[in-house]
Each structure stands twice: as C-alpha cells, then as structure tokens.
Image (cartoon, rainbow over the protein chains, first blue to last red):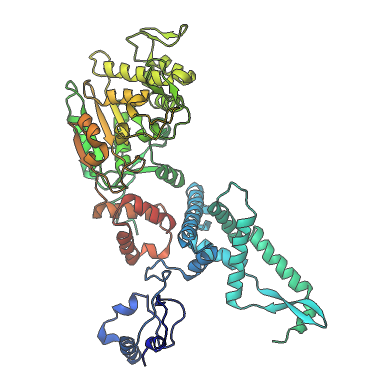
Length: 229
Length: 357
C-alpha cells in the first residue's frame, strides 16, 4: 500500500507538502527512542521482538518529535510541565526556566543540608526531581466538579477525575499561581521554586486551592446522583 | 562509593604541590573575604555559598605558573604570563588559584577582576583634572580602591610614599605618609579616585623591587584584552572614547609594561566580556589585536585546556561527595558517559549541567 503517494494524484498539488507533522497515515509506526532495545543481541530476541523488527524494516516510521530523547535524564512528567509553561512555542525559554527552578531548589536544599546537624541531615530531601514529583502529587485533587444541567438550572456535581485530568489540573494551578500571585520584580523560577518547596511540605496556595475544591465537592454531596456515568 | 576512591579527591590539602594534580584543596573561609572580595566568577561564588566551603582543583596551568613564580629572578624586569584557552576552560579559576598562592606567600596582590568593566557601561565619565584630554571613572576607581584596601591591609601601613601628591588647592598628601592614607583619601574623595589609583600604581611600581623592606608585587589582570580594544563609551558629542583616553586604562597599561622589577604580571584573556570580538576567538593574537600583542610581547603563554580524564573523574567525585549530583541516573555509569558527551569535558558547561541534574 503506497503510504503517502495516494494523496498526490490530484489535478493540483500545493507547492509545500507537509512531511513531518502529528497527523499520519495509520500505516506509519511509532519511533522507538530507548537505547536498551537496540542493544539486545540477535540471539536473545524473543519471537515477538523478532517479528516486530521485521515489521519495522518494511513499514515507514513517523518522525520523532523534538522533545523525545534517548537520554537517561528524560522525564515525561517534566516534559509535559515544560510544554504547559511554554508560550508562543518558545520551548527554549520554558526549559530554561524549569532548569533554573530545579537548580534553585537544589541549591536551597543542599545549603540547608550542609548547615544542618548530623541527626537532621537524613530528613532533608535534596533531589529536585523527587521534590517536583512529590509536590505535584500533593497538589493533585482527588475529586472534581462538573457543571450539569438539570431542570433548567446548572448544578456543581462532584465527579471522579481521570489520572491525566488530575495531573493537568495540578500543573495548571501551579503555573497560574506562579504567574499571577507574584511581585513584579520576582522572577518566575524563584517563585516557582518557592511554591514547589511549599507544596512539598503541604503548605502554600496551590495545596490550599486543592483543599477548597475538595470542600466544595463535599458540600455539594447531595447532587452526586445527578451524575449519570 | 567514595571511601575507596578518596585518593582522587581530598580536602585535607593545603599546599599546591605537583603530586596533588587533579585533587581539590580547600581555601580557608577567612581568606575568602580578604583575598577575594572581588575576582571570583559569580557561579563559583554561588557554589561556595551552597557547599559552605571553597574548594579549588589543582590543575596543570596553575601549577606551571606557581613553579615559574618560585624560580623567577626578581632583580630582572618583570615576567608577564598570559593564560589563554577556549571559553569556560578555567582561566579565571587558575588566576584566582595563583593569586591565593601569592597572598599566602606574603606578596602584595593587585587584582583587577575584569578590565572589561572599565571600558563599558560607565554611567559617569568625568573629564580628568590632571590631564586635559583624559576621562575619569570615579565609581569604578573607588570600588576598586575599596577592594584593594580589604586585600592588602597589612601592607598599607608599611609602604611610605616617596613623592608629594597635590589633589586640590587645599588637599595634598605629603612624602613619607603611609599608603593607607592615600587609599582612604581615594575612597572618600570619589572625584579624584582615578588619579589616586594612578598614584598608587606608580608608588608600588617604584618600590616593588627595593632592597630595604622590599615586597613582591603580583599584578593579576582578568580580561586584559579589554585594555587594547575599543570601548562602548561615548563623549558628549557622541564620538567614541579610545581606551588610552581613560585614566584607569592608561595607568594600568604602564603597570603591565615590563620596565619595573620585583614582581610578576599574570593576565588572562577573556572573550566573554570583550567588546567587538567574535565568540570563536580565543588565541592571544585574535583577542589582543596588533597593538595589544605588541605591548604584551614578550610574554609567557600558558594554555588552559579542558578537563583531562583524571580531572573529570575528580570533579565528578567531588560533586557526588557534596551531594550535588542528585538525579538517580547521574550517579550511574550511563549517566556519567552522557555527562562526558554533553559537556565535552568543558569545566563551565559541566558545572551548568550538573546544576540541574
């Protein structure tokens, strides 16, 4: 089956053809960025893996996006956060802000670590990635609200949220909080590191917002049966 | 992981001997405020604050400089050493290492943190009172004098002036007064601080090689290529100012000439702060230009290279020991190989990578 040539047999073809974008013919296969897969020697492949390799040698493969790396330091949650922070497609600035944030968090924690007495050293978490993940976990709401229409009025009904939705809400709240409630002169990475460290210890405005959502859901318990799914 | 590998990294060194190449030695905390009020790279200062200690790696260029300084003949005219290398290879850190060595040996250190700061971004440019066509920079001069005073407290009372200096109709500094008075005057009377700098440099030049109460003078200039390029400063009629027309630059150039004896001039080239120089330039010929090269000629060039394998190992283990490399994957072999690949063993690039990993 000709992969992309079927579209070209038209009376008029545009001068510029899109070659690499996110909508592909289903014939195309996903790229494999992980290095370990390619290091397995021929003899140790299972029959499924051998079949997969043969398939990949005949079928065309989608182009990998710029955010996909084979690096060991690649973190999908962090990449999602960078994408959400990005404005006007400027990933360099967004990635720069996130790296400065991680560095700032690590500096504060390592300074505290070196100044702390021996007994307290084990309790201080210095890994910025661990802090980031834990802070995000602490900001994720458990239950959400949906606006459901019943009898001409709209009610705020508590609904369960999917994992993706929860992660999205946590990141969105974190970013909007840091963009809105900061002093004109504080830089984004400084404010973001303060908020993440606060969320890590379950304080701060983002965690407060999560608790308020939970309280609203609790107060609207009576309308829970308006949900039909 | 580190108990067995401590031979590469140890903080219990105080001297700078040849066998400790690749290892770190600690600068005592008291020395930081006296020897380095200015002059350390800003990222290194942040690192000192975070780790609560200042460790410098003993590297080959610094050791070479120190061995030259030990064996030089100080009755002959001054030798000039020039550190050059690609961006981020450790020229400023080697200079600071040598400056620390000189101050522990009791030399008088004249450390100009960055000559480029004197040829750009000057808010106040006063016409000089001493010479009609020159310009003064009061803020930069008084800042530098303040830092000079902190560095060389003990010399200020010992050195006596050999000439009478007249500042205004009522102010003058007499012969035989200690240098400290001159410096204090420069710091308080900001308007004549550039001329005070010139006077201080002249006095030190005359007295450095002296047999009675003689001291050794180390002139350490970072970014020496700024003295011979162009400036971004403009006169009131919007015409550009040449570097010779600035008092500070004029006096510093006289210092770098090798017509005095009893000390050494250690200089570093720097592309980072330089004006109108391409970013790929790092060799002395390219950065100093014709005029600069002719003035610096003859000099002893000291190339500063990127980290060798042993030095990289040492740096990696130091960061691990100070709990700086926190990412779980950065502590594995795979992560280390990736760090080598990404940084190409360039010290500053490695530092910036490890900052967020």
